Length: 181
Image (cartoon, rainbow, N blue to C red; front, side, top):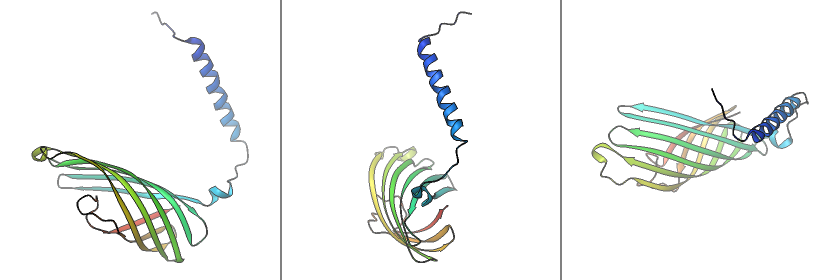
């Protein structure tokens, strides 16, 4: 069997560099770990969604992170990815990001504002295949209120920019559950 090595010197150099970084990374494990003041105030969370029904499937992954300024106020960023499929009707991919502000006037009550910008890519199929596919951006500006207990908040939010022809939501008033650790 004849094996030809292409760019052998490059492979050797890259292998040595990889070994160096692996050794360096392992050596770092021996150092005491201390979080900076910034990272001590960052909380991670988000949401997951899964829905199935008669010829329908939907899955959502929406991670987010907030910076907790104090016990009352937090500001954060989130990502959103959703896939929907309705058999013989359409399939859609929705990707976007959001900016989130949280205010707790008392420990149990959480008020929120959230600006969300989503890109919707919808492809029609089956008897609806003649309907033109669509790809568009849709904004949402939510104001909400919820009941908070420890890391979980459940409540309602209302989309002030709701457009029933473009929004991915069934209506402007939407229940939510937020979890941050």
